[in-house]
Image 1 (cartoon, rainbow, N blue to C red):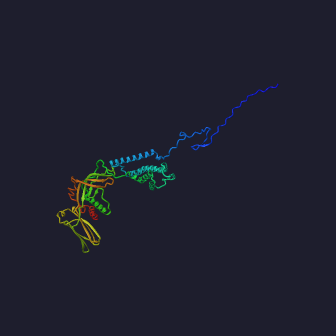
Image 2 (cartoon, rainbow, N blue to C red):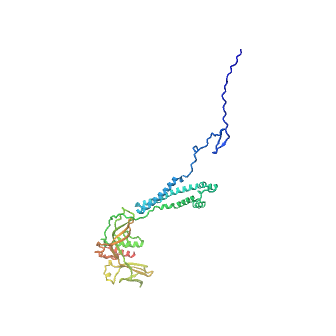
Image 3 (cartoon, one colour):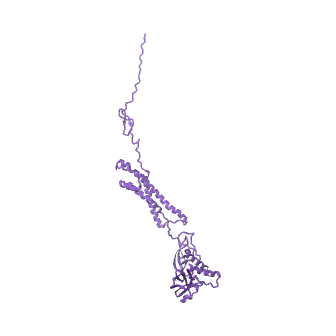
Length: 437
């Protein structure tokens, strides 16, 4: 018997659902394509402030507020420092420098180089700020909606010469850039003057008094009889007249100062005032009352007189120029005629046969001793000034007692009684050299 097949239940899985249809492709306001669901919702979320932060504004470093504030504060501090330094300098009369001149050269280099370098840094900062300000002018104009956009974007102040740029900026009514350009021009022009902020000057300041030793006392040298001093002085006078040697360091005008030791170990640059003794010598030279120079035979005769002291000399016509010196003689004034030859007045005479001219000069030396205040250059030892304080009160063999007995040697005639041959020769030399000086 045939069997009937048992029916089986076959189950089928539910059919896979196809993805939903997407909405047509659209462009978002941010420029990216997006697709929507049938309901119009997008799977791509719009950008938000948290996912895409806005870009920071660009600003040059030199134009940032803290840099500008630092620059302004630096200039303010520098100005205050300069005023304080100027006040202290005037109050202290400057700052002392080492006495060694070599060190001053280094200091002079530093005091001119350091201020220029410091000002150069400030000028560089201002010029950098000015450069970036010029670069930002077009954007500043766009931000204020001034001018056409094309003209504004093409505006460029960085390529123009500074000395003409401020005129263009004023013409364009760009006041802030014009002010910046003018300030830069002033800074660049005044920068070299920074080298004169500090100067080295010779300034006088007073130190505490100190004692200095003297080399001797006022008086006649005990070796005067050998006439060595007279011959040396006459030789120096002749050399000075011929070659302009200058005076010895202990002589100033008519003064000869008692020498003392200069405190060069204490200070070598400056002047020193000291109280000492000095001899003042006045030659008291005057021209003759009468002078006559005329032919006399084959030569010339020079005659003249002064204060009753006559002169009568014969001059050789074969010599162009003749001169000499001697003591006066045969004076009608008894007080002069009675003087010894070493202290009598002297007469210098000059005659030129070429020009038929002659002159006579009479001198009566005078010598006094004083207490003085002298000013000495410590660097060279030369006298700068002699100020008499009064007569020298102590007795000396110059103004009283032998050998001068209050009189003055004329340096032309000497007492050579019993002198050696060398002393006699020095007597002649001193007279001849004095005539040539």
